[in-house]
Length: 278
Image 1 (cartoon, rainbow, N blue to C red):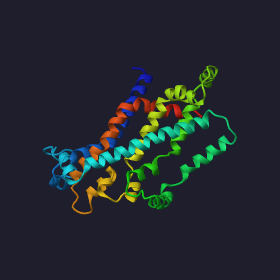
Image 2: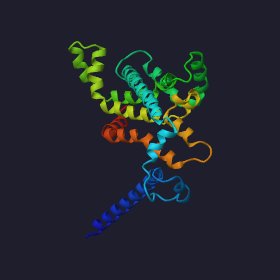
Image 3: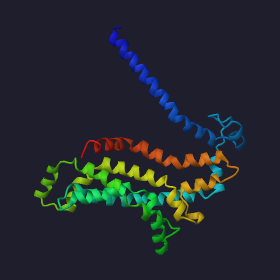
Image 4: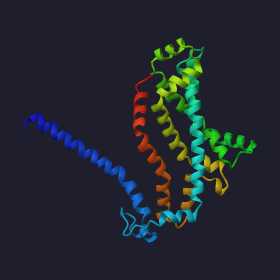
């Protein structure tokens, strides 16, 4: 072997070793969660550091539904997520089209002001939202969670970046054919923006699915809780059954993992394209 080949082989070996180490560090906590979800309650205390149980206890995944209305929590989270995603995709796409393809006075200034909402922490608007929802008699309803999370400035930014990369010649051809703004938006822009829509869908779903603060503040009744709030209540304060909690955690994150596995192609493409346009 030449010196160049030896150097290249060594570099590749080191790179693979580093990647393997990072992979182990990343997946070890997940393996521990899966292993703990299959342990008995005494095992979670006596053999807490072990990754695998002596005898898998699949019954843990059934016991979740006996301890709490976990199915109801899942449905509540799904309803809120679907509603927020639908509203966010529609409003973000329409706003992004106005900011990227239409020419009107003060467009860039309005866009900067619109994006400035990204720097406002959600904690700042939590109390005003609570007071407003109380006056509207929407506290302790799923609609409260939907309305307070439905509009995402980040979504408009992501969609605008993607729309700006679509050739204007396509719209000019549509104008010649007599297409108006609405027809050009629905027939040209939307079909070409599938990666951007999938990216925004995943980002929004993760944000809503993992949201804990807003359900904690706006939801009081047991049957209106979401998954994150249900998991926190399930953990309790004393004598936590970690095997049940970890089993519930695995069930709660499974939809996100499955969705990403099916949509990762479009997600990666959308992130890559949005990062190179503007």
